[in-house]
Amino acid sequence: MADSKKVIIAIPVLLQGGTEMQTLALVSVLTGANCRVTVCCYHENDPVMVSMMKHAGAEVILMQIDRSIGSLRLISKLKTLFTSLLPDIIHVQYLAPGFLPIIAAKLAGIKTIFATVHQPGRTYGLKAKLLLRTATRLCTAFFCNSKSVEESWFGSSMLFNPLEVAKGRRHFTIYNAVDAEYINQLATAVDISAARKEAGVGTGRVVGVVGRLRWEKGQAALIKAMSQIIRNIPDAKLMVVGDGPDRRDLESLCEGLGIAKHVLWLGQKSSDEVFRLYGIMDIVVVPSLFEGFGLVAAEAMAAGKPVVASNVDGLAEVVVDGVTGILVPPGASERIAAAIITLLERPELAKSMGQKGYTKVKQNFSLQQFKANMIDAYKAMQ
Image (tube, rainbow, N blue to C red; front, side):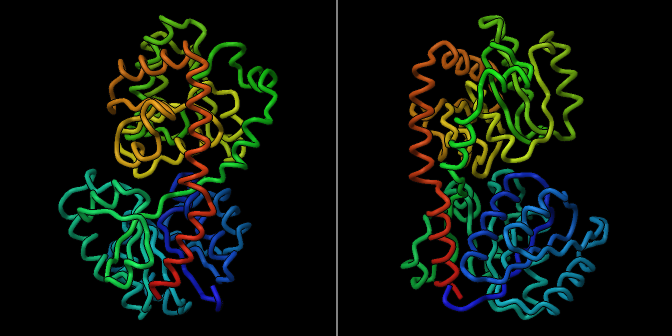
């Protein structure tokens, strides 16, 4: 941007997740455009993610407010902070309690307020939808990370187009982005034999799943599918990357199904470690029950891997069924198993899908496209 703007990015948590990674991408775009960026986190944080934000050029304010504080006190604390900093722009990552920082920004007299919503509206009740609609009226513009997310909240969708701003449209889709070249470089540079040995998978075929271990990510359905996969392909292994509150229950499920020795729990890994692990996975599965975008699917495609994913929300925009992977009904273990078996037994098809996936990511979800859209949006809507 021609002149330096002071921007606050307001986000409830800084943990290791897809929303935080896209916030990191936004920070990089804005600092690269000569903006002075402050990331304000009002609840929990992970030191690794905080460090990544600082490395990208942002100042980070960790308010560490207890979630039991109550809405009015949270608004008051945020308003006080926003007033003291007096930014030109506040960009709210609209995760619960997304509505409250928007009110705080308005009370602080901030003229330009952007918000990005990351999850589909179908997973929320009427109250949440009414709050978001109200928030839209208070914001300069609302961005969504997929067309399905935009449609679920607003009833229509449109990829960002500066010409539509003049016509009064105030909500748009700007897809999340990944650095396809960088991910592919790390994934393909891996010494597969050595990496497989280190990870404990040996020469078996590897099914990978990456993400927080929570019910909505659908790992239970994948684990149930593995029992069927192993009957057909005895050397198959499931590599689980990530951690979360449901890990113990998922481990118990593996033991109950008698497949514990086929499942490797790698725990939380850094982004670069995940990108290298994609290199030893034959297939990546994204079995989410709902998903605003599907960052893991895009990353896996960037790594040249075929993806088996739930046919839901933004995932259905990232993965092209029969071209870059296979879409299956959410929670359908038998269909997940059938798709995985097909790709493991047809390596040439899997390779072709992986190659086409890489091309799709470069064309549709590149950092360059994300940067161009965000800079144009910031310029057009101030």
